[in-house]
Length: 283
Image 1 (cartoon, helix red, strand yellow):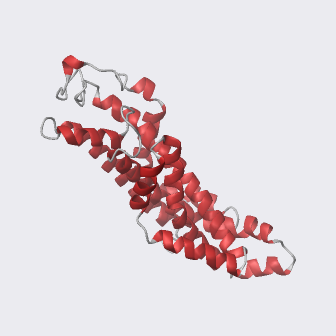
Image 2 (tube, helix red, strand yellow):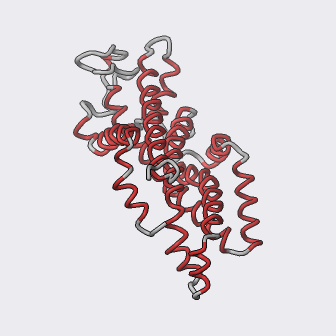
Image 3 (cartoon, helix red, strand yellow):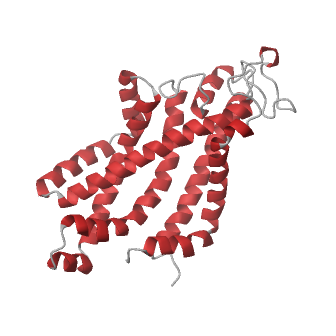
């Protein structure tokens, strides 16, 4: 695969995938609402209206109001900032750390590679939510710790994928040829390995993004992530459970929002996978 192959596929094949286009457009709406939430949201998400508690959806509050009279729509819009920023930052940590560990496992020598992969295998056996609850319960739930923790929890997935992909690419003739003319490991990694494993890393990242959003929401729901009154989809769900039989809209809207964005990301990931998979592409 040539160095520019990924960018060529992205420009020629990716936007011919209907699933990717639909997912990309919907996700773009979430991202834009997060960026421009100050202008889009009709109310301040922390502004209380005690005389308008548990208002049904209407002209004053489009999606209703919560137990403090805060506008649910505004909190959902501002909550997209937290959920997308936390999940996106954690994804960058996971991808970077995983690729580095995977490459180190292949090029760092047999002993180092074995130790890294066995440690990765152990972490992969433990559900991320279980590890997250255990760690956050002891370290506390501030936002920086949450991002780092979530990123570290997903490093093993990218490390294992990077390791296996790197081993496959390393056996190709052009890599052996580069080594035979005296190319250093660093040059081989930069020129031949990384460009050829990035497609699988990107696809895995698209699916992990949705999982990270769900993990952040789950931790916030349990009171171990973002702390109230900061608007977050998980926080809104956690608060709404106490008022489930008083006003079902409190739980409906954040749950529906989380479901829509995760479905969107998974649909987009399916399209991305098919566009980057040579076996799925038309000749």
